[in-house]
Image 1 (cartoon, rainbow, N blue to C red):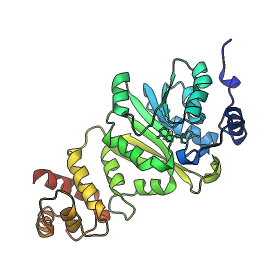
Image 2 (image 1 turned 180 degrees about the vertical axis):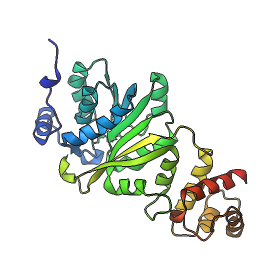
Image 3 (image 1 turned 60 degrees about the horizontal axis):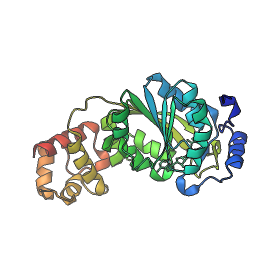
Length: 291
Ligand SMILES: C[S@@+](CC[C@H](N)C(=O)[O-])C[C@H]1O[C@@H](n2cnc3c(N)ncnc32)[C@H](O)[C@@H]1O
């Protein structure tokens, strides 16, 4: 007897999610960031954004009970989902995998440990990434977009609103961080919309925001040079840039030498990292690469 999606409890509403939780007999695990989304329109927002670039397949981080997975599969997308919790891996294997045997693969893995790029190289084809990210590992997961993987087309993530504000800040604005500057180097970042804490079960203590990153294919300078100076500069974000660069592990120059190099390059050495514009970051990376 064939299984249809309608035979499987849909977790995209609070009633549906509670039925799923009662069926698998578990409570959401706080330590794994299990605040499940119960807002069909938010799932649609993420899945529609992914659909626009028509990737050959989509890497989904943390499918949990499968609300977003379902929205992606219903749009005809092929999904590889990485979930660390065996309860949800088993649930998806017994339900959605029977309806979509050809287009859904569920891997029981830690999304931080597995190499996304190796997975992509094995599968081939164009790919995008999405997920309602577990808050406790959002920053390292986002850093994988430049530390691990390089051939993705688009990433659409639900993150904590405060994280989105920092990522959407332009270089030179107070909210910027090393992560936001480095991500801007590999992608155009835009906000797709806010999702209130009431749209999750159980509700977290913060609101969320959906962000979209569209990869920039050929960056202007070597990423390693930029990464080195950005990380060094933000290590002491309250200090003047000449001081934080001098204090960075492995720096060959003291604060006076950095002041001279920065001034020669047209950058005010008394600025703090958060005040540097995008063109100043690029200039700084070039100066550091040359020296
Ligand atoms: C915020 S929930 C999102 C669940 C579902 N996608 C939704 O939108 O309702 C985060 C999911 O990520 C999973 N998760 C947590 N840490 C993980 C990790 N290191 N690797 C893969 N999945 C993880 C959790 O078990 C949970 O299912």
